[in-house]
Image 1 (cartoon, one colour):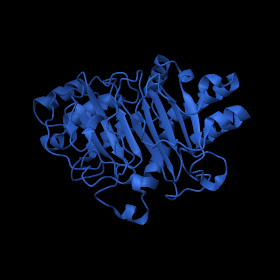
Image 2 (image 1 turned 135 degrees about the horizontal axis):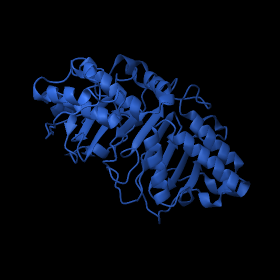
Image 3 (image 1 turned 90 degrees about the vertical axis):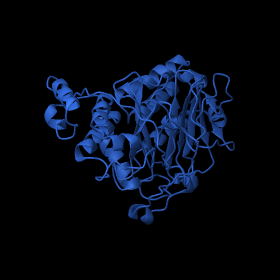
Length: 373
């Protein structure tokens, strides 16, 4: 899995702000060769007035209109992906639609890839020459459906700070056949990989591994990470560290052995996990850890939160995990640990807060689910 990501199409915005090596993409990572793509008949949920201008003429439009008339005004992200798919021209499908198991030599199984800054396809969401305004509006609704409503403004701030705003450096891909048995929508960009799959991807939460991050004011953030929308997660985790007794702190805090941030593949129930076993927490400490978990999943829709809970339960709950803090890269040398990790048999939440926030997430109900390498 690559971690050296950049944007081959450099922008004025990025020329004004430093980008770390770990936020740079390999030169060939954006190359998308011609590939097989799927077609599907229409069937939508939005009202006909909302989609009439963007659906193709003929039988598809007639079917879409008939399906839309009695439908509800709100839709799941997955149903909106189906709407979007039905509006795509052959040229658009060739550029952003893939078979379920489409694999590239350079990037492996594309659907399950995760990185801290990457373009899954060649066209950004705000590219008016590629997407129609109606299509852009549908993509925005898909995005808003994946993200919790309470977090829309905060994620927009992250995108403003990191990438010149929503859609400016976000690209999408669709895998499989929307409306069929297996399909998935993936949106990527700087400090973002999110997905929706309608439970097509068996045994995993979020549709697969995800990434979020933020460099709020500068590449090198101050100790208190001013304006960073994700820093409250680390503050809550550090409050738990303060609740530990001296023996627990000695086991939880590691002076060396910091794993690479992108190392979030599963190690199973016999994995050699670092840090303090959750089973050694007191009842009040476990209660606070539950509050930390609430903050971690809070940015995402309820169905994704529920999947995380189900996957954790299947592997033994938080009691099957260990919590580790790392003294390395302690910004400001203030003892507020910028890097920490919660890990279990098929659960990894790696929070790297130095020099700015990167968070890698991989959650499944069993460790046999492989991460794209």
